[in-house]
Length: 240
Length: 297
Image (cartoon, rainbow over all chains, first blue to last red; front, side, top):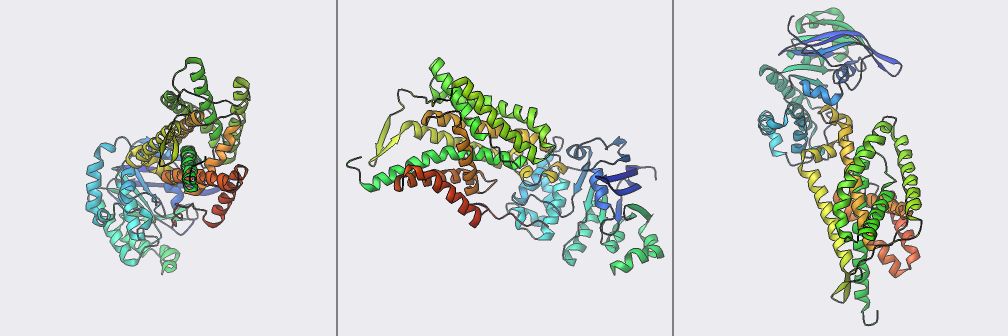
């Protein structure tokens, strides 16, 4: 593992006085799908928010392409090449689909590619072209997730972070979503995937980290984890 | 008014209400924009308006330049003024939460009011020109030329803001931030930059409304607070976050006041306006044109 794109090293994260994450380290390598797994409240979203600088770690380092992210503002993290699709999609529901996508290309260095990026987004999700003048709030959950992902891609990221993309989607949409994630990865996108949908996440992930109440419990490749009895007990049993 | 049929009087009152309402509307759009980015009612909006009115009063009395030229003077100055107020005061205070910002806005209002009464005395002023009283008749009603032009300027200002919000990347970012500041930041939009832009535009619109006020009405340093309240009511009528709604809300309010002072009596105009405000808040809190905010998952 030489080619670390993102390194999270020994981070402690607090909400006020309450510690949410204890001494967590993990790595994301170029062109891989890395999964962060764990139950609700394990600290997965907290970690993504800290990479995006929405939260600041109290201790530890976060390095992306040899550049520290810790002191950046959230709006500056996008410019270094990290796009974050937040949990619950968080579209601008009163704006149209097209306007949501356009705002995805807001950073100065990505604006010149707006047309090209739009074409790519509509290629990836053709239904969005049909819906482009609808306000985003009127779309179905699956379509909203497509807009959220497409909007994040408009910034031409190197690393795409997806927080619970399958949450609240119909099973059919979920498998299509995972196919899309895999397809994006095959085209060279590095993906950091936070999921409670353990089975499907492990099927597409190259490597996974398992969090439990704010600490890193295990890590490994999909097969290894699925066959690990501790892992089975902790997650697969619970997840059915 | 002898010779006028009651219908033309009614129509006259209606038109006057529309003129008044256009001014409420412009002030309301500024209020609504600032609310969108900072989540506070900028209560000093009316005081800023009157400040612009006094600036023009000065310009006209000292240099006898035509007051309509004041729109071109006030617009750039107040854009910078709004920007400076945000950068110098609100940007810092906003970090501490909404309440300190609200207090700051209240403090600014009191400061502006007293400064104005120190500089220009608390006496009522008005700006008059050779054509202030000119009017032309149309279907038996009198249309004041100054009020007509002022209303057209108000509509043009609204149109520009509307186009800015709909057509430019910056304008779309303003709408995005007003809906979800944190997500906007994740997309690379700096909330403090957007807030400074909206503040500048909001204050500039207050300036435009102020110029319009001084051309058409008499004013004193404390007149602005009433305007802040009226702008707030207009925003509540139209629904927060909608430019067209704020303008239509303002016009509705103007017409309502005008009609009630004609039908009942002038003293009742404010009472009717506030009663309508309460009714809207109870029955349709999202405003007459507002959409119920979409469910978030």
